[in-house]
Length: 130
Image 1 (cartoon, rainbow, N blue to C red):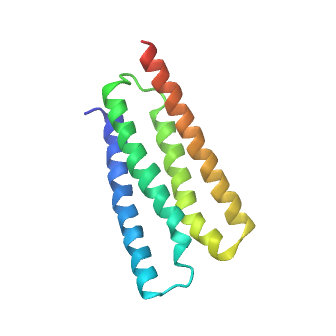
Image 2: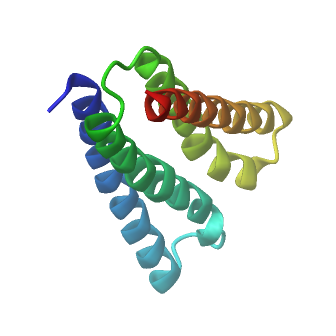
Image 3: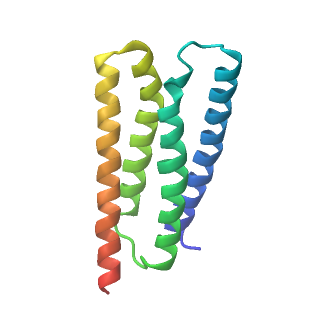
């Protein structure tokens, strides 16, 4: 397996574990009523499972099968994962506090994810043209 595919696959598995833990905590919170704002972590859980696990595992597969000479893999990985950390941590905090600074960090995280996704798409298109 290529190093770039391994990087994305290991990261995807970490996000799978995190997403499942976040989901279990949210379900226990809804059931037992620890926090009246239990739904604040739903967005973070979706980010961890959809972008963190599912998207990055597909990226690992595509890097393994299609992209033979990845040039921007480090930038794609960094943009996606820094953006994910900002949104996963920031969304519940923003919902609870409404802080403008946290809102800016969540928005920056979203933009970083878009940048990582677009960079990956460019790299994939270049690989398909060869």
